[in-house]
Structure formats: C-alpha cells, structure tokens
Picture (spheres, rainbow, N blue to C red):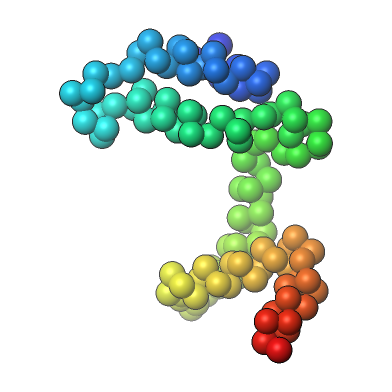
Length: 118
C-alpha cells in the first residue's frame, strides 16, 4: 500500500490501477462488499484529475489541508453560530456566497447578477 500511495504523486496512477486490477473482487460480490472494485472505479473515472506533477508545477495544492483550513475559517464561523439553524438549501446558498467572497470573486458575482437581472 505504501508503494501504491507514492505512484499518483509521480503521475503513475496507471500502475496503481494495474495493481488494483489484480485484486478485484469477483463480479458475484456486491459493490457494498467490494472496496477494491470501488477504488479501481473511482481512480479510473478520474485519471484526468490525477495530474499531480502538473498541479505542483502550477503551484496548486494537492492535499486536503487547505480545504480543511477553509472549512474552519469560512464555513464554521457562519454556520455554527449559537442559535443558528439552516435548511440544507439555505446553508448551501450561504456557503456559495462566502466562498465567492473568499475567492475574491465578490465584485464579479454582483456584476454578473446585475447583468442577468437587466
């Protein structure tokens, strides 16, 4: 497993798929009991998202640390206020606005919104 975890970062995801293919559960096993098949399918469907070398060259993050940090600094302060409660639709809309602002796209959002209203 440690060897396989290193392959995607080196843009060698096909090697991981080859190793997984050798351990695929039989078709008679239901998906719920076939974690190797689920992993193989997940990676196979996302090969174009696994260009870690390209992302690193562009200075993009490849880990989840920034997402987890954003969750603490953008999501939680607004949604976890004492006494606050949200319906799923309202929470999703609020988060979309907060993320738009955090990404520096607030002026563009309102310009587009005004264009659509006109």
